[in-house]
View 1 (tube, helix red, strand yellow):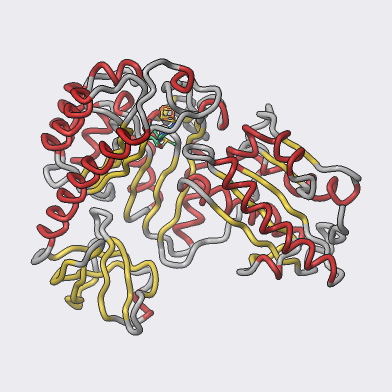
View 2: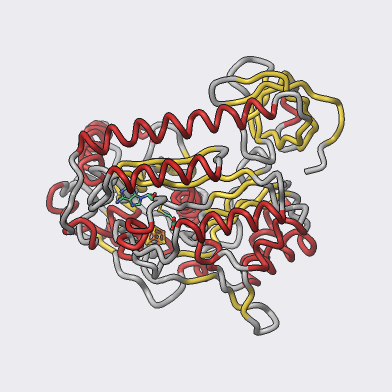
Length: 464
Ligand code: SAM
Ligand code: SF4
């Protein structure tokens, strides 16, 4: 092993060390990367932009689709060169692989990339300081891919770095017990667990105290949230959001990702009753064919999804919907695919994510008969994406001429521009001062771009 940097003690934590985190995958990984940075801060680690300046590099990986492991090995090859160049200059580098690929392929990573010092699964990152110390002492690499008995959230530092721009993620639920035929999450993230209400409220309170206006609540199945409340009762997501808005003062709330099966009456009603809840919902359906939905083990039919959408729109008529679609699940016929297209036409989506089915090792669908040829998946995906694109463009075009509240989260691409998000999660750019960043302001939408909107400030403070 090349030299590792000496590990500063918690007391001598002022010694600055560079930390570079590379994040792939979903928002939960973005949240996890930020929390890994928080965990390492007492050891003196501070985020740096370039891996060449980093005493520690963490590659936080995603295993959900397409050649995840190959991507990791190719990136590790690049990071090995960085590590070697730093070693030649007399600097040690701790190289860690985190996230779902680490969980699923930990031993393989160490066998194929022995220059990796630490492999850690998503449930163990609260133990990073101890792992860094062990890596510094040990002759071999450290691997931590258990699902520890202790809840990692109980061991994370209460203080977290608050992102600039007034918007933050907050993980409230992790793991999944639904075992959809195609999905690795139950194997990489473990069983479903919800954080206690008090812990969520405390984290939210700190974020709000630091100027955060919008919190996106995260979970693999966030609407399955069932946290223990301070009153000893189990709180669902609707009750939690009501407390976040009315008790803590969170101005804007979003949640993702939801499963149609867990959309209960309280949650549907919250879309009509709770003004802080933004009128945008990501509700994955995957397919419009009952046959495929059953093969996927999704636990609902296409009609049940349509009915759910109707109830949601009855509660909040301007609700913008987003979804996930998979084309080419084993056994999917042309007719099944056409039913998915029909569901899209019937529902109408403001945006969506769509993927070719990708066999994930160890999942039931990967060994199933009726695998769909790649060229068929390609053709279906193109057709489906063209329809979704049409719907997205139409939705955005309909916003032109409207006045919307925008939370400005950062500078725009052009000088003098700031950018943010509309309530419907559309990107909006206006000419305006940097002082708007982190603030909500009213904007008249005047222009449609390919993936965003252009607006003019009205001079009014936004209504969140
Ligand atoms: N829990 C959410 C749900 O039930 O819809 C989804 C979470 S999953 C991390 C995100 C999305 O990745 C899924 O909705 C699905 O569309 C896609 N996905 C997961 N496994 C996949 C696979 N093997 N091939 C293609 N897409 C996949
Ligand atoms: Fe994966 Fe979502 Fe299905 Fe769970 S519910 S197995 S996270 S797709």
